[in-house]
Length: 339
Image (cartoon, rainbow, N blue to C red):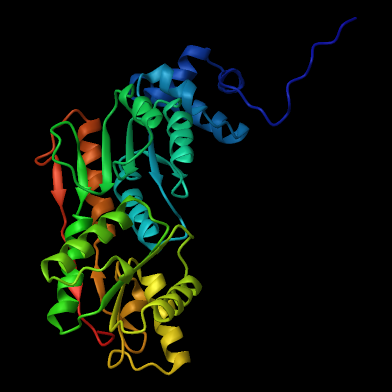
């Protein structure tokens, strides 16, 4: 006699829940997806069965059954960068109490990975999507174009009428820091950057604009590398700049990791900071105010960006129109001891 193939003991289905609760499959489904439509007794029996069996609803199946997903997809470039960790923490604090679960994807600054994540996550039909920046491949833009639920962009701004975004002008922030160094009397201001993602390149353009305004722009003062950013790389970039352009009197690094590495290297080399060389960073990470000398940098409110973007997305999911489509949180140049 042919035996029926037994299901894996780790896989519990909604049918198992219905059988244990002593109700129909439809009643069990309704008790989980629309609990207000069933009696208290039935809801309690189904919940007891769910807990006893360890049943976990499949997100896609639940979305199809209820015509509403409780998932929100978040795509960021890095989880090793405190900037994005702070932002995700703030997003979670807004969306989780509202009943939404996060699917967090990390693109590692690679356009092809950004596209892959979009395809994988949108297959789950999330209720909304939070993405970092506007620049992506044509294929990724096509995927986004077919997505009908709301999308809010983080960290950058757009004036396009169809875009919802929360961020600040990376270009203006780069220019503001450069102008602040020039106003302090520094004349040979170099710019060093790594990773070269769109926001880094916008800061670099801001640097160039400010240097052109002052009549001091020189491409030889720039050192840009696609390598991943790190404290060690900051030390290497400072070595490279001093070897190529020994006359420099200030360096603006595109993030605090690089700037901190340069500070440590300057100490090893016996360079007076800021007497011989001023050093500035970007993002105002917690360590920036506590190193010696304390780091001049650009303060960015990434937690606020995450919170406001999540609130905007939540209103869009609920069918409400946000008061603003474009929220500029601004930035602040923090002049400290290193410059």
